[in-house]
Image (cartoon, rainbow, N blue to C red):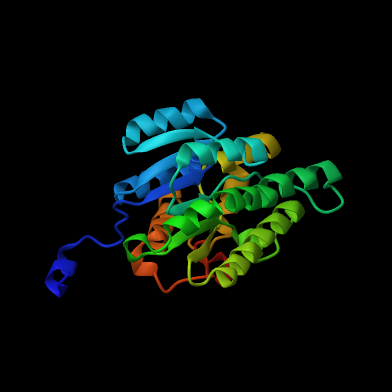
Length: 262
């Protein structure tokens, strides 16, 4: 391709690439699915909420639904047989928990680690052969983007289990990047507080009677003074999956309105 031809091509394209997004039916996952399709990729929307996933797939067109429970090796194995080929894996599925170490019961801790850490391990391990098989096709390495959190980079009060789990996701990101440096690019996006059903569920469960007060606090702890938007995270996922990011590996990208810089 000549330099003039390159200049006429839109940046961050993912044409002829196949991606899978876990927890892809809502929030950051749904925004990511939309953005990857917009970039030219075919997207597998992997979720336990099939109704929501199917509705999104109809909206997007270049997408298909696959049932996937990140805590179940059997569910993941079935999903692998449906997918068949994979160039981009986005590990997005996760849950939250509020509480100090004293208020975090063993069952709560285990649940966070099962979904947020073991789930990433199980999904990545199961889809790794497909990723390695596709790596190098079209001159691009296969790519994993893990959705981490600023909670894996700094301590946050009343988030003992959540901080622990997201710290593990960031460690896995770096380890995989150095384990497969010639065949796989693995990076993580670390959002601050983002305006999603995930956050709304947290407010409803833990702060039903003072939602707006807590919402204001969530905005204030990010120097920009607002919550992030799912689309802003999705744009970074698209970039990291693109050929323009070919020299980026094992990196952690904060999208937090300046929270971790303050």
